[in-house]
Amino acid sequence: MPHSIYILASALLSNVIAQVAKIFVYYYRSGTWDFRWCLESGGFPSSHSSTVTSLTLAVGITEGFDSSIFAITCVFSFIVMYDACHVRYYSGKNIELTQHLIQDLRTITGLHFDDPIYQEKLKTILGHKFVEVFGGLILGLFIPFIFYPFL
Image (cartoon, helix red, strand yellow):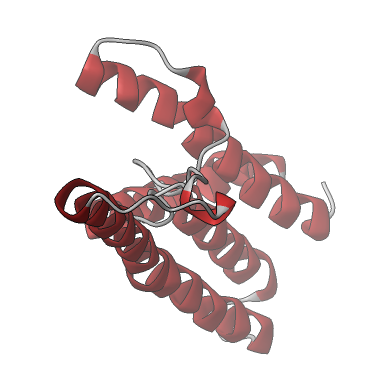
């Protein structure tokens, strides 16, 4: 298998496995099947972190852990995981807080917001908790090693 296909396959498979795993994790927590989790962001494990971890490890295996491209993918991975855990997570919390404040204003003051923007249902789960990012990282470490014998 060419190195570029190995790297791409490792990253994409890691993403797909993480997304499908979310269905089973949701079932374990709630007792109901919700196949929408296969396409959702957020949740355990983080497909963002599993994808970039697999990408980085596969690059390190094929190009060397002392290569420039490994260093680049490593920094890229840290940025993506930080963003998933902090920036995107707190963006979702801000949406949740804003929606709660609007509901409180409606209830307390009786105000009616006619602008359609206030009726829009926004997704509040955008990012990940640390444990979800860490779970994705661990998953992402396994996939390149599973594919390694085919290299």
